[in-house]
Image (cartoon, rainbow, N blue to C red; front, side):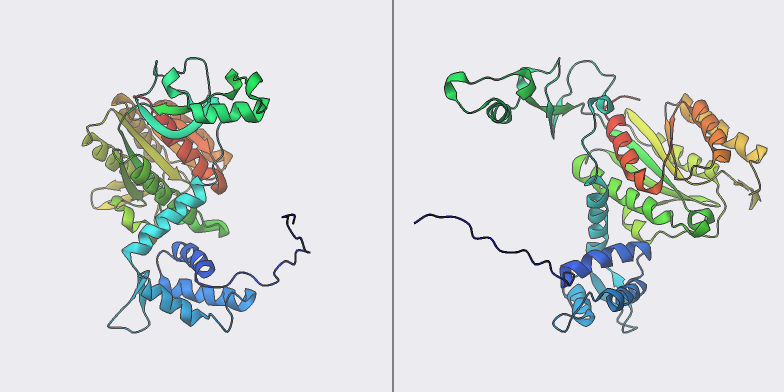
Length: 368
């Protein structure tokens, strides 16, 4: 009797997938957008349920809330019934979700994006495989993968087995360098102006980068600071709760704090990543603030450029990620970058994660 397959017409499901997992993915997105406000996230989820029928009679929103509590994702306030807060388990879950969302979309870059000024091979194997290139050592060649490629490319006949350079795969090596990075996030009011939510993508990138460092580069240091009228350091666990304030943009305070943090790190590689959408508009003077949001104020700009030069003198490059393409601001960013001898990217929100990740991976392979 012949063994085969029986085919029938494919009937797509009219209803979206229901149950805890599908609701949980939406909940994690919403709780990030609402800065950790569980009540507001659940209200939005209820509205989506009314519009798209996310639940049914077998599994309702009440069941989902009960499961969130049972699985340890939310806690209920004992003093005020019905008021929930997320748990450390959820905080870590949000970071992992951000890492999967951003890092999972990154494509294999071309060889030009992985160049390093070091001569010779790195001394730490990574998990990445790539094609053989001139200069790779024999120890890097992965024979099982290479032989499989040869069989796929040239056939399985043992008498005429052929292995060519194009079949070879090697395991990427990285230099075992430690990197200290300060990630600066602009939380001035402009990050939510003009009907565009810029703070949520910035938060996601920060959380994803933190999770990447923790998982893949545990010896590296990552400090996160936020800057508005002032600048202060936050813990990675605080990122989901980050909100924009009624602030101006005190870039000077952010850079001063970042450089103070990096001076304490005894690592060869030090760098500052700055995510912002606007120009510097504020300085701290005594107990007050000097503010000017109308144009590029000479006093504020000069102080900012002086700090860029100071960072260059102590070999701390600053990479600026401008999440707006306003031509008016590009001239300032170009001057700031030239003074620091750093880099600048003008990115939409969708491309931000790719740029941050690629730059981090590239910079940690060299001594700055």
